[in-house]
Image 1: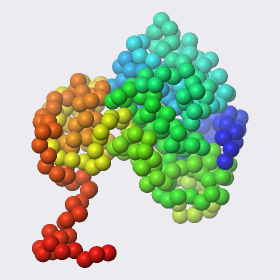
Image 2 (image 1 turned 90 degrees about the vertical axis):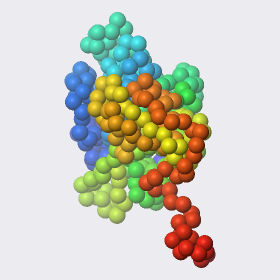
Image 3 (image 1 turned 135 degrees about the vertical axis):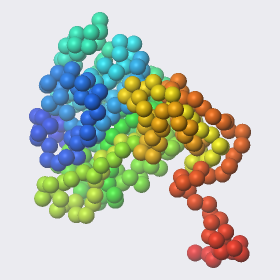
Image 4 (image 1 turned 180 degrees about the horizontal axis):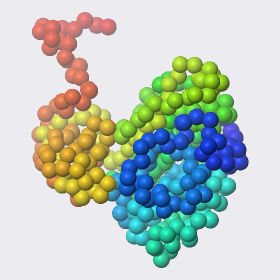
Length: 350
């Protein structure tokens, strides 16, 4: 697949969200009320050419420096602009000149709409596989977002490595993308329509996880997911039984996270204060932390809260001085379980 085919599809073939052939590259997730209010402040032309697949607006962004990979016409950039405020900044990167022109044309309109003396956004033309070629300083971003774009990239590991390099220590890559339940054959991966519709370039989920870890994101966390319906009969016939999902992950740049959930007897207490989540803080799909309630956590989750922008909202119980083994219920079984059940210490070889 040639990247120029993708540029052609998003720059010239698609004129608006209604031109898409599947639900893969459109936002079918329920929009929270606070984001509905923010999107109402975004210019109609920007919204009409939106091709995302999920919600990529993390919480607690006041005064943050944010980078949007594959920003398109800037819908998410202008939502983020309102959340970071005049003290923060949002940079959008995209390879499609036509979409960037639409985004950039409305910078002053949005600055006036949001009440800022000057725009807190900028847009850069470039390839996500080659972020080091842009005017971006390593370690300068608190948060990087991306909405249904990495699947379109030819060199996905390079995108992840570039994002890791640009994040501050404790920073976060929070992104939605399309994943498949299997590895697709080359003929499907090179089909222009399937690729443009975010299906041909979808990663097998069990290839993505080690890829993220190799880039430095040692403990990927799934935030949400939904199945993608493919109603186009011709496309469905080509894809056979392959199933596709839109999923949002958060990846933290934290050194020395452990490969498994280890138990140090720690807990956290959410004190509230995150505007978007006043009563329950959601870290991922299995960490819903109620306000004022002691919540036991593994060492990695402790660090994802204590060593990031979320620390001011939590009280922390315990430390790393005593280890109790694998955190209960984390899905990592002891290799000695079968021997323990047998009661004789012996296990037959495979």
